[in-house]
Image 1 (cartoon, rainbow, N blue to C red):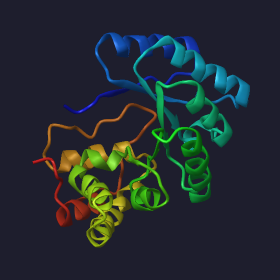
Image 2 (image 1 turned 90 degrees about the horizontal axis):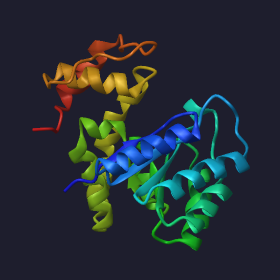
Image 3 (image 1 turned 30 degrees about the vertical axis):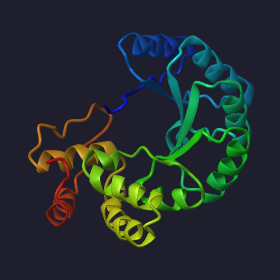
Image 4 (image 1 turned 60 degrees about the horizontal axis):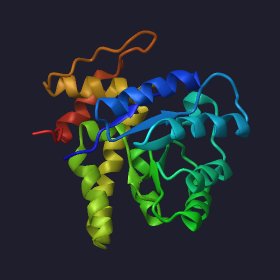
Length: 228
């Protein structure tokens, strides 16, 4: 059985808690909560936000750290504190390109809680994160190419470095999808539509669909999706 984590992002802590409780009530295995965006909250406010969420539900929580869209990079110290204090905060997903941030976080959080997972949100960082002691990835590209993503991870944990690198090189080619448009979700929806899945290339305004359709089509032609 595949575990289901529900996104509960909102700017208001009370609203996030309502969504988190709803996710728990309908049987979700966990939730993934992005930092509140727009206002630049300090460490105390962010700790209170995540503490209240953790105290409101029993299911697992992933802290989603994506500074490019929220404007906030959660401090390493805060993640370590939350990992120590709340057993149901089980992981952090980080969509950020700084390897130095990952290196320091992995070292410090694993020192206080070895089973706390550090995950990347960027497919092109999957193997580098594994090599420095991270635990895996939660990535948009896996919606179209799950087998390649899993193969990188599986071969690495099996100590089959040669084949892990081979699969990772393919993943790097697929990661060109990240840079075609300003929203990877819109790009993946267009890709899946071109591949004749039931997914339609529709996004809600102000998001826009990608214009470089031929570039997406060329990647699809070389690398058919892995959903069949």
